[in-house]
Image 1 (cartoon, rainbow over the protein chains, first blue to last red):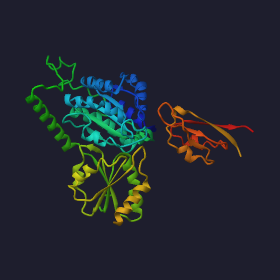
Image 2 (image 1 turned 45 degrees about the vertical axis):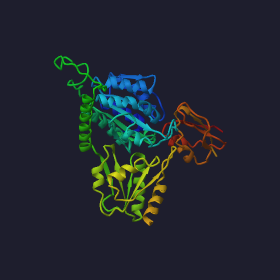
Image 3 (image 1 turned 135 degrees about the horizontal axis):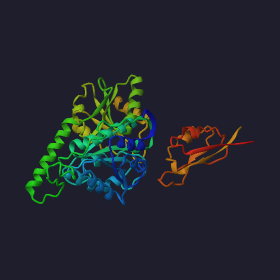
Length: 353
Length: 71
């Protein structure tokens, strides 16, 4: 398959199949309906199974059960649906089961609207569910990245036995762009018999017991220590970030996903005017790319965070920079995205201060 | 001026508004209706379609059919 013009949601679904996803459990919600639609049509072709559950709560628990067999499973939803799944996501993390969750984010809170948003940043990176757990959260800003990060998500989920979220926003889901979807090298990787259910013989008759309930405090603390060690390894190895024209920038825009695309245009336009603006774009929202923020050059005087929410990433930028820079924010909510001009004007305003 | 008419396949429309911007005679708008996915599909709100098919060409979801009316 060469480069084809595809809708983001369908590209994500095909990328998942090419990454070896065999089982999909989900429940429809706009703006990600094309993912289950595509899966229902194409998973049977590869010997997989598509199940439309009766709710998001059911689908995430099917993901828990399916993932426990070690095969590549996935669900997708959009913001309010992910809220319903939060309990299950915490259980999956607690049981250390690999799973991929795609969140095509829409505007909130509550049912909100069906137009794009990025207001699930805190839910994705800081919790949602209960307990000390973390997801790896990947934020694509082009459709090719939607494809690549979806495939990476399956590998990371298997590597760390942890749920991985692809946090795309509604624009990523609904726009069309040329993409190339290759079969992932790990597509046919078999389930890991050291822990996956259904491989008792391969383990020499040993049971594998995946659970998140530990009634005694000592084993639960031990379990948490083990999880934290794993999250530490993720923080050390899995930070991903793109720095764009950062080397001599005076003003740095911090943005991810669709707002990073818009900011990139603003940076190009402002650079053409001779203004020294750059961009730092976290690709992993968790683990947050602290290492990249440590390389911010001394020319930088201000940081502008641009998002489609009310400023959820501002705190992370402040922490990542040790509060050494004034951090301002520009965002739109309700389904709007900041325009290139709005971001340019905000940059000009800050540079004139 | 040539005359045309359009049919919107409402279930495929995601109200992106690209056709509204592309229409050279500005006869399209986002309607007040809601489709099954919750989007407001586009509609032709006044006469004047010239059958140029700019709307159908620009539509990313192939949701518009254009017909030329024979004089």
